[in-house]
Each structure stands twice: as C-alpha cells, then as structure tokens.
Length: 263
Image 1 (cartoon, rainbow, N blue to C red):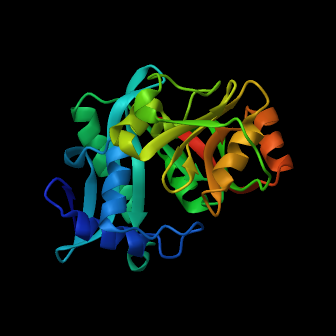
Image 2 (image 1 turned 90 degrees about the vertical axis):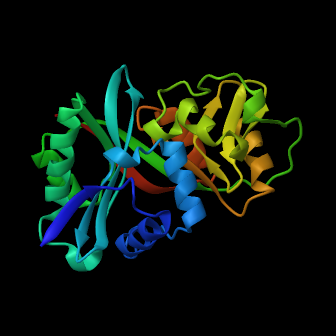
C-alpha cells in the first residue's frame, strides 16, 4: 500500500537517495549529492509543501517536485523533477502521484501544469498525454567544446549584469533569469560584442545569444576552463543557432518536449 504526502518534512538526504535510485538507469547520468540537489531545487524554486512523494513502508519511493511561478504570462506549477524508484515502476504509481498532485493544485487555485520530458521517454510522454498534456515546443540540449585561441572575451558575475534575459527566445522554465538569480553567486556572463553566454561553475550554459557573430569565440574561451560545455534547452525554432553550434562540433545530447496540462 502506497501513501502520498507533501515533502516539507522530508530530508534532502532521503530525497537524494531516492533521486539517485530513480535515475540510476536514466538516459543521461544524473547522480546527485545532497548539496547539488538542494542547489538545483533552489534554482528551480521548488515548493516542498506543494511537492509530493509516494511512500512504501515509510520509505520514499517516488517524488514529484513542483515550482510555482509565473511562466509565459500565467501562474503555473512546473514539474522540476519526477522520479520513481525502478522496483516500484509498472504499478501506475507515476499516474497516481500525478493525480494526487493535480487535485491539490486545483484546490490551491493553480490551473496550469507544465513540464519537460525527454522525447524518447515514451512511457512518461504517454502518461502526460493521457492527462491532457499538449506539446508547446521542442527543446534541444547540446554538449561539446571549441578548441581555438581567442581574445576579446569579457566575463562578469551575473550579479553585475542587467536583470533581463539575454536570449532572443523565451528561455525554458529553469533557465529564466529569475531562476538563475536564485543561486546568483554560481553564475557568470561571458560576452564578446553582442554575443554572450551565461554559464555556471560546472560549465552548464542556460542562455546564449549570437547577435554579433562572436558566440564561437565566447564558447572557445569557456572551453579553456571546462572539459565539456553543456548548452541546455534551446527551442527548436532557433534553427540557425542550433545549426551553427552543431557545425562547430557540438552534439545533440537529448531532445525534450515542453508540455503543459490544463488542470
């Protein structure tokens, strides 16, 4: 028998153990430490009182972490992470947890639920689709580096940069400036002319722009400091930008659907 509850009294250590079990067979390596997971939840704006877990014999075996914020002009709940421990899959636990979440969110006056799902995750996509999820756009996650000598690139801490998106597209939920500024000391902006990349201390890049054709120089500069760069969630509508990155040696690691459900 499974029990469902919010996670406001669940320790980050227990959530980390469940995360690592849930993603032990995932497409992309997702091992977390408690410190990294807590930082991720902080950036995502996770509300533990509106995030929910499935428990079996007192052990956390599944969780759905939600952030509540404005997104594309509406107050939404956003799925920052959903994971079910492998041995508890195939029992409709994911679907039950989502329905439990839906009922509580509606009672809180939240009528829209958004998320990202890897396109090859057929099971999760089918569940979201069955709950009324519609694809709003496709997102591309790239990984790579550029090895060449460059000059003229400047770096500022994000705290010294204007509080506005640098992209020419609307960033994904966790890549918005308002999200990044929740952990502002971890982020910087590298720029040359009107081309720029926001990056963190691990080499993850949540926002890029290439207005002056100097993005390759910016990425080459960052490649000096990181083994690989990760550029996350560029909308597929940005075909020229994605093509340019692929032509310089970046590879598509995963593609995701951004979906929303009207509750």
